[in-house]
Length: 367
Image (cartoon, rainbow, N blue to C red; front, side, top):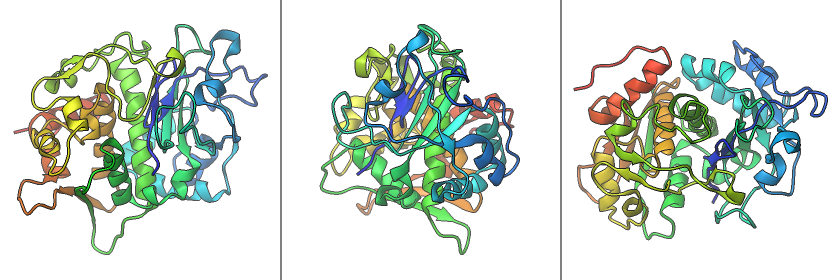
């Protein structure tokens, strides 16, 4: 089973991600493609997507380091590869506002063939599906401004991301492994439309872009030293504290999948620890979802994941031909979870409106 990780600044990871500035073009190919636009799917691939060379080290060893030690990721053109074709399909499914974000708010999206885990310096039992990376400002990496997303090459072939249903189940079973049973994840689509890998890839892209949104909007590009730019209108609806900066591999601020942030606490309901220790019939998970606060179980684990998962859900419900997603606990009870209903009510509706406002979109009425 493959996971998602995010690397955030200093170097950090969330589905998987990290932070790095623009490299010196004389040292690393042509350097990041800054400010490139992509009005259509083909232009998106040409202007934004590259293939990284395979590497045999940890993410930090590959892209870490500060000052003159830092080398930004740089790849080769992805045009014409099977993976690029699938990413283009995902791009074409995205709502217009997210296509625009992919074209303007991230410098390069990489197809990454390197399997970063499990292994030394990698606490996960499974490899990641994707990562988000931004350059640190202190100590400085390059210009301290550039952002990258990586999609694991295995995401284009693994059964765990064969479609959106499989992907959502993979995330849940990775958070709560080795259980005797799991809820059913049931995406719904327009008549005649079927689930597929392009939707799973869209979900990965959206989650990672949600981490970049968090970095810019919630942390003000401050390497986790601020984190409160979204507190009043977003995080305070579910968190009494957003905690302190995470400390991951080599102390470089890598936030691995499914790990809580030190000191981050829920305002009410089950704690992140209680959710992650839940067992069938998942009373704590059900309580968290039915609170109307969280976009997913994953989103209740840490404040940055809360932002990324809310952002992702807004992308999915706006995707072409996508209708809704249900979580069914398979116990005959009527208290299941529905995406559209949750987005239209309570705290999650207010949180979604905050993201909409930062993206220049109209808010919806929240009962």
